[in-house]
Image 1 (cartoon, protein in one colour):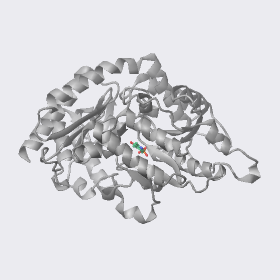
Image 2: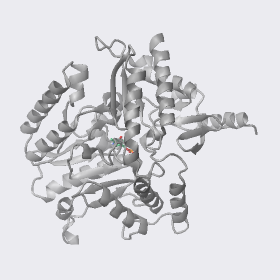
Image 3: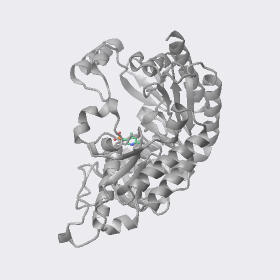
Image 4: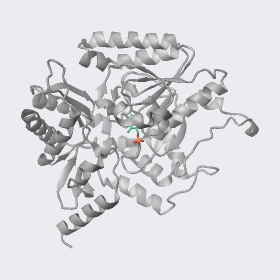
Length: 455
Ligand SMILES: *Cc1c(COP(=O)(O)O)cnc(C)c1O
C-alpha cells in the first residue's frame, strides 16, 4: 500500500466508525482529517509524512516533546514489572513513589494524594471531598461552590455544573447543580472597557457581595489560578487570586485550585498559584502530570481535610470514590520520570528567556493587527482574541469560524493549533526551542492576517 492509499483507507475507517470529541461531525465528515502516525520532539508527523509543530501540546498536556527518551524508558521499564494493579485494597510501587514526589513539588501544606484518570475527575474528587468534609465537620449547609464565569473544569456532570457554558452544555442543564458565579476581571476590562486596576477592584467588589450574601453556605471557591484556559486564556492578576482566596477563607470556605491546565510549568512556575503565593486546600492536577504521555490525574489536599474522614469502619466516613485504573503503575512511572526531568534539565530556569521571547514575538507579530483585540500571555499559555470591530467591541459571529479558519491557515506554515471560538490559542510544549517559537508565532500571524483581511 502506498502512503496515500493508506491515508485514504484510514480516512474511510475514521469516517465510518469514529465520533470525535467536541466536534460537529457533519463538518468533520466533509473534510480531510490529519491522521497522526508519529511524534518527534515538538513535532507531529502524519501518515503522509507531513511534519507539524505541536502548537497546543496535544491539547495542553505535552511537556518535554514527543518520544522523550527518559519518558519512553520509564514506561518500558515499568512494563517489564507490571502494567496495572488496583489501588483498592492494594498499593503499588510507582503510585507510592509518585505521591512522595508530588508532595515535594506542590505548595507546602498539601500532602495527601488521591489519584484519578482525568482532569475532570480530579475536580470531581475535590468537590466530593469538600462536600463530605463539611458534612463530617458539622456544617452540612455548606453545599455551594463559588466559581468564575466561563470557568472550565472538565466534562463530568459535577465539573460541568461548575463550568457551565450555554453553547456546550445546554442539553445537560436539567442534571446540573446550582453554583455561585462571579465575573473575573477580564470581563470588566475587555468587554466593559474598564482599566486593569478598575477591573480588578470591580470584580473583587462583585465577588465580595456574593460571598457576603452566602457566607455560611459556601463549601468552596473553585478557581483556575492565573489563567482560565478554556474560557479563552482569560488571565487575571495575582492580586485577584490572593484576594479571592482570602475572601473565601474569611467566610470559612475551602479553596480549590484547578491546576489541570496551568500545572507543571505551563505558566513559568511549577504551579500557577506560586505567582500569588497562595496555598489552596485542594490542588487538582492532570494534563501535564505524565508529561503528556498517559491519562493520570491527582487531587492533593491537606492533613486537615484528610483527618475529617478518619473514623471506625462502621461509621462510614470513608471517601467512597474511585476508578478502576486509579494509580495506574505505568502512568505513575512516567509521571515520576516527568518530575525528574524538571529537576535534571532545570526546565523552569531555562524556560524564562523563551517566555520573554514569546512575549516579544507576540507584540511584534500581532500588536499592530487591526482585528486583534487582546493579547494575553501567562508563561507559555497564550490567547489572542480576534474581533470584527475592536474599537466598538463587536465579536465575529460564530458562523464565521474565524478561530478555526486561522488554525487551518496556520497549517500552511507547518503548525497545528486549536482555537477557542474567536481566541487563537498557543500553548507549545515547554521543550519548544527559540526557532520553533518563531515558526509558531509567524505561521499563526500569517494565518490571522489571511483570515481577518478577507473577512
Ligand atoms: C482540561 C481541563 C480539565 C479537564 O481535564 P480532562 O483530563 O480533559 O478531563 C479540567 N480543568 C481544566 C482547567 C482544564 O483545562
